[in-house]
Length: 81
Image (tube, rainbow, N blue to C red; front, side, top):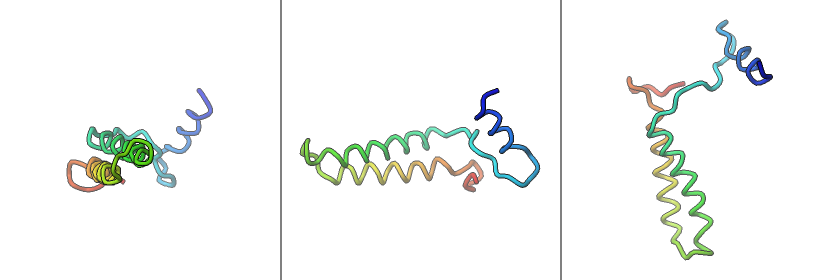
């Protein structure tokens, strides 16, 4: 077992003292939101070179952030913490 595998096993032990790290499935909305957010950051770099308006970058980033937050909400409406 690798070092990271052993570390994850130690952190995820179920004694109630430590938080679970990772290993959470991502929803489609959350994945699309993260990609849009990163795309908005990339679009933010293009106005000087490509002549794009900053509004495209702001809209893409805001929509991506909202989708990421909405995608993190569980089926019962409570955020997955």
